[in-house]
Length: 120
Image 1 (cartoon, rainbow, N blue to C red):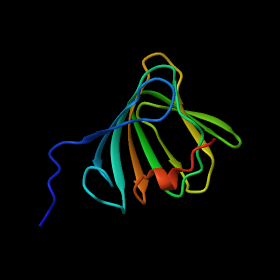
Image 2: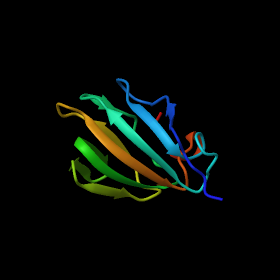
Image 3: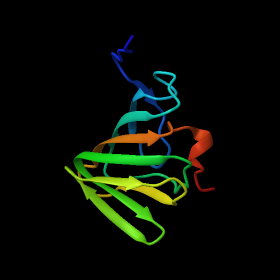
Image 4: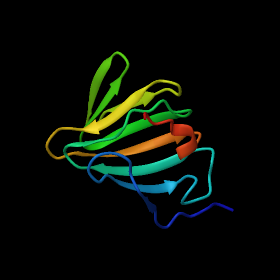
């Protein structure tokens, strides 16, 4: 039988300022460890600690702009664009531009505090 997800769970976000995470599918909301799918809303000026996750992350920016710093520089991912970050790569997400960012993040396997490996 299909599993109908009627609402997300709100999850406390790491980083400066308050980012809203609404997990629809994942370890918290649907007890799923294979994949997580969440909608993120980050305000202008938000940044989170760098991380070296044990999951692949696929991100689609819906509104605004998300900055993705990595070992070789940074990429600004604007509305209508996407980015793939492979497991084992160091990365840091932020939304430095006015208006912040709204985006969908998909992690395979599902996001967890044990797999994200945040800096310091």
